[in-house]
Length: 327
Ligand code: TXA
Ligand code: MG
Image (tube, rainbow, N blue to C red):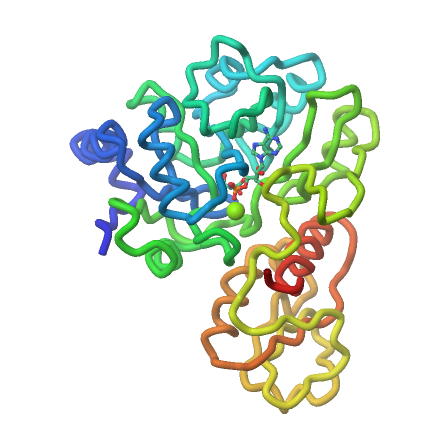
């Protein structure tokens, strides 16, 4: 098992922070809590360390990683920030937003971080752990979600251990993630701002700041805009059935709000994303509840219809991928 380090120890105890940074310095992997999901971090400037991320996740080499920094100033060293990118960085960082911008030619990143692209994905998360580690290390970390490729993202330290086991040396335990779905990814390398992945920051908040609508790439799964946005992803073992208005024999139920679907009593197991009908609470609970229902041994998971606005866009995206045919 990996060593589990409480997040508070990084702030309280310089020796602990140093020990964690030594692990990264040696090219090994450290799982870090962020407000969205747990990330699997490596020194973004070390090619061998970055290769270790791809290996631990079983991630295809064409799928680039997000560079994580502790401050807006440090983040801007890796990419070209035009006025629009600066507006978004200043409005939402630290926070659940990733910006894809042109990579600066002098960016000191291992080539595999960007999978050979001339753009780079950058984020400043709301995470004391990432802030302290990058400051002490003096380098950025590359960090995808800390799950095996194609599986449900981890929102607790325990989930990380379940997903990755000994492939990760240290897990920083920051408790459950408060947002619960991954960051919203906005592409700014072209003339239009593109919503590459809906996520923990609602699209309309972004549109309000840049004063223009986000372009939604065509939903052609054969041509994903973010290279990692493959049709099947976030997949539990059980088959996922969306917009369910009843529960079939052998199914578990993922409910929302106070109204339960027909035959709810049949459910092998039930979780309610938000009994009060709060979409943020639903996002926070989504991945942990998918894991829990999967662990019930149910053959399928029936998911009731969910609201569409705000974070509902991220919920719909993750659930559509969870329900997509598996490769
Ligand atoms: O909330 C999050 O974003 C979490 C936490 C750990 O920060 N990270 C995360 O990373 O979700 P990951 O690797 O699971 O998803 C990153 C996505 C992938 O779909 C990848 O294809 C896309 O970002 N991406 C990375 N670089 C890109 C680029 N240059 N252009 C387009 N998409 C890019
Ligand atoms: Mg992921």
